Length: 217
Ligand SMILES: Cc1cc2nc3c(=O)[nH]c(=O)nc-3n(C[C@H](O)[C@H](O)[C@H](O)COP(=O)(O)OP(=O)(O)OC[C@H]3O[C@@H](n4cnc5c(N)ncnc54)[C@H](O)[C@@H]3O)c2cc1C
Image (cartoon, rainbow, N blue to C red; front, side, top):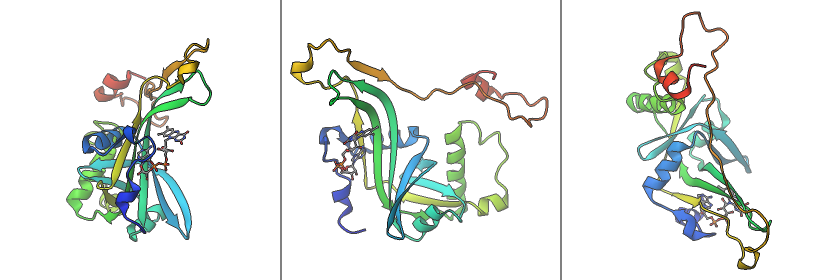
């Protein structure tokens, strides 16, 4: 990486919306279901969406050792990771001031393979429980081959920023009396009822932890 990483993660545009608090950064990383990873391959910038999980002070990515993204990151290439939670559509009186409410994190770093079997298993559990709390104790555990065939990379959370926008539109004072509706449309991700797999053997019911969260299907 050229230049100092500190110069990269300081929020300059709307600096008042930025935060470097680990609790704020962690909360966004934990709530976001996936991230987008940026890196350079053969002099070209690439961005790839993928699942992440935070384990303590590390963001972990996982996948096949054949993945180009994981291969390049494993080789020590610097990367940037972004996550975004979309909280609302901000409708201003003026077209110019339309915006979105959000919480986002940008993180810079270099990945290190997680080879220690205990840490790897902990991260695997983290991925499974992130997809749905309760699955680790219900689904089949990974076989030796699956375990060995999963590459896990950890990126330390030490060059990261969060940025947030919340609240109503910021209209110009002279626009406030215009007869144009202004406000916020809140947005959130909503889960539907469980849809059983078509090849599910008869008698396999929706488990309690799913029923409690999503109903019967
Ligand atoms: C849903 C959404 C919609 C947005 N729409 C727009 C838009 O339409 N136009 C627009 O200009 N901007 C938009 N933004 C803000 C955008 O992400 C940038 O913050 C902004 O464009 C300034 O970019 P910059 O490179 O000049 O920032 P700088 O302040 O120069 O960035 C410096 C450093 O601050 C950190 N940083 C910057 N942005 C973020 C962020 N969002 N989250 C966490 N860290 C950050 C990074 O480490 C970055 O390297 C949007 C953000 C979100 C999440």
